[in-house]
Image (cartoon, rainbow, N blue to C red):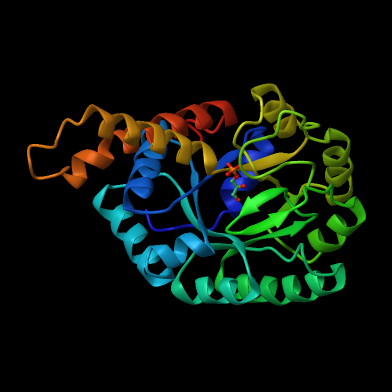
Amino acid sequence: MPLVNAKEMLTKAKAGHYAVGQFNINNLEWTKAILLTAQEMNSPVILGVSEGAGKYMCGYNTVVGMVNGMLETLNITVPVALHLDHGSYEGAKACIEAGFSSIMFDGSHYSIEENIEKTKELVAICEEKGLSIEAEVGSIGGEEDGVVGAGECADPNECKMIADLGVTMLAAGIGNIHGKYPENWAGLSFETLAAVQEKTGTMPLVLHGGTGIPADMIQKAISLGVSKINVNTECQLAFQEATRKYIEAGKDLEGKGFDPRKLLAPGVEAIKATVKEKIELFGSANKA
Ligand code: 13P
């Protein structure tokens, strides 16, 4: 199945009280692992690409070519959206040109007026081209591609202003953080989440920083309107651990160094296991 935008999968998730996982991709191995797992679980999936990962993978055209090639060769029949994660205004335009099916424009660091103005412009382009669009209000804490956010809670009235522009989904800061959560983390603000959802009606809400949030908080967030959950660090940690173990075992040395395909295989399996666990937790299995 060719790439689809994320609108239908998120509308269904919202109505069915589950969430679709956005798993970030960084290379061919990650992409393959995520697609194969979504297919095995019969789950819709969103492939997230940060601007840094896009550069690393030789640009957005290469990413689109790689993903489209895999959808065909791996015979992927579940709905897959290719989504720019935390895009700048310029990055969003470049991904629209390159053939992504979905973008996030993260205008949370602008004033609300400028966030509205730029989001509005991108909504119009996405509508015309049939892409879905995610906007953000209230920065997500932690570090994302070198950008450090403080993790504030979004203002529900500002969320309504952005939602009313016609975005497909909205990321609202509710105390969530990218990367590992600190020991003294206060937890998600369900009060903010409920207030944002009340103001935004049926708008699918997005929970960033999906790594390390306890299962009961994930379930509560879904029950309060979260329909998309982003995960990156957990896949990174799983990949790192599996690769480290493989290297330490020194299996493939034989004087030639490691066979790169064998070296990366345990990491691929580790990502598959992580994605499977998340799809089960988010409730999107058999919802393709
Ligand atoms: P984690 O790295 O904390 O899983 O967050 C991913 C994310 O929100 C990408 O936008």
